[in-house]
Every structure is written in structure tokens, then in C-alpha cells.
Image (cartoon, rainbow, N blue to C red; front, side, top):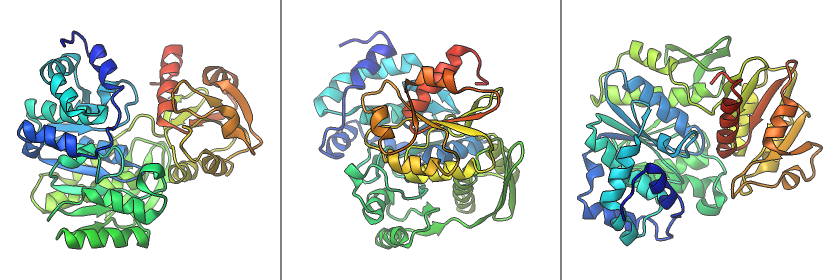
Length: 410
């Protein structure tokens, strides 16, 4: 089969779901082409929340001295944004060329969309001679398609109760799955604080002869026009108003300190400060309109929503538009949002796994406006701050709507 456009390729691969045989087929495919991923100097970032932000912060700092590839998910603007070099999306022609060369093999090995994306990222990074590649785990860790790499260091941001249908319904079981990215002799860096999770990490690190490094405490966290915090004596400013990003950036800083101290990279404190300042991750406490003020955030589980609510604590006169996927703990997320306001509206968006508004609203005194576009138009008000949240897929649609309206700050 010959492809003429990236649209044709993406249309074909997006229907290819997880094949249920763990990583065996993907590993066999990568082995058949010589395991190119082992040529890359890379960093592996896993965890429940903050993976994308941490990956982006690492990229922003490292990009000052190195050519940096990043692989993240899900996409926010276009399928292409999963794979970037120096924050520039993969181009159409590269996707077409890889598909025309390898599509028959992808079919032969029964690869899923995520596995195909991972392969394309690896090959793209090699073909463009990146110095360092940062891979964000998609789901779990031990059986994730990214877990074919041999990283300089592994990062697990934190553990939350998410994707329980795949990873188990306890912190211990989820930590065990995510600890699968820890490699022999390669350090683990984590900001997790729960002892039941840390116990899993310690045991795995001992078995793998790997050092475990816990992030230090942050201090002086506050927001004026930007975020301020201090980490290990380093006074940091970041161009965001989300307090929770301080914790994600701290994980990135700890990782950079480790890589620098062990001679993997060269990176000054000044470069760390500059890179973190510029590390803005779209869809995370992102202002899409200033007048009136509209903030979007992709928080999609209880822990993520708690962090979002904490970051909104200083906002008065706030109203919320909420939607979620059917397999997420939307009632627990709603309870968190009630800490901010009782002016909450739930809606729906066009996605196969999206929850129905009546189901989300069941048992809660909330407003229902089914169509998210109508909801936005109804709720936007100069006298109120509008927070829109609940799912990255939802936020992707919302951002696109604001762009098309031509009234956003994007």
C-alpha cells in the first residue's frame, strides 16, 4: 500500500488498538530492524500526573545546548504533536515516508497505534541526529511501548489512582506497574511521598542495583504575574500561574542535577532557570482568553483535580465547565471542584469514550448544557473567571473552538 498524505496514514493507524499480547510483538518488530532505540541517549518519564509537563521542562532546559526529541501523549492540537524535535512537530512527509517503508511490517507484527507512533519517534530522532530524547510513558510502565528504551535515568513523577482497569485498584499495584521502567544500574528519580509506593520503588531499585533519589521539598511557592518557587537553593520563576507546575518543574530540575553531576550533560544553573521559565505546557492551566478570563486544564483524575483546585484557591468569582471520559472518577473530581464554587456546569464533547452529561451530574446539584460550545458561549462572562477542565481530549476540542472563534490569547 502506498500513502500520499499523513492524513491517510493517521486514519489507518488510529484504529489499531492495543493488541493484548503485551510488548512481545513490538519487541519482536524492533529486534527485526536492529533495535534502533538503543542508539539513543534518552530519559524515561513515567507517573500518574505531571509527565507531560516534566518532559516539557526537561526539553526546554536541554534545548539550549542540545538537539532534543520528545515523545508525549495524548496529542492536544494534532497527532503530529506527539513527536517533536526542539518543540517542532514531526512533518507530514516523514510520516508518509515511514509508513510507505514499514506499513506492511506493522501489519505483519500486529502493532498498535501507540507502538507505531513510538517506532516513528525513535526512527525520526535517529534520522535527525538528536542528542537527547525524552520519552513520556503512555500507560503504566512495564508493558508500555516506551519501555523498550535504555535510558540514562528513569523518572516517576507520582502515583495516583488512574487507569485502574489496566493497572490495578491500589497504590501498590499501580506503583508496581510504573516501577517497570526502572532499568538495571540506572537511577530512579521520584517525587512520590506515599510509603506504600516508595517501598515498591526501593525494592525494585535494590533488585536492579539502581539508585533511588527522592525530590527535596520546595519552598517559597507563590504566584504574582508568574510562578515563583525555590528548589535546592535555586530561586525559580516560571511563566505560568499554576502553582502545581512548581512540583513538576522541581522533578525536572532534580533530574537535570543528577545528569549534570554524573557527566551526562552540561547545563548551568542559569540555563536551568531560563529553560524552566520558558517551559509552558499547553492545556495545563492555560489562559485561552484574558478578557474575560478563561482558563483550561486537562486534569483528568482525582489527584490531578486536587492539584488544580489548590492552584485556583486565590481566584474569586469562579465558575466551572466540566466534562470527562466515562472511565474516569468524575464524581470524585466534581467533589474536588466544589471546594472552589457551586457554580458548576457539566457538558458533553464528541469523543467515543466521553461520559454523558446526565451520568456525570447524577447526585450533584449542577447545571447541564449538553453541547460544550453552547455551554462556553453561555458561561463566558466579564465578571466571572471560567475554568474549563476534566479531560485532555475535552480541552483539545475547547482550545480548537477558542481558536476558531478568534477571541483567544492562543
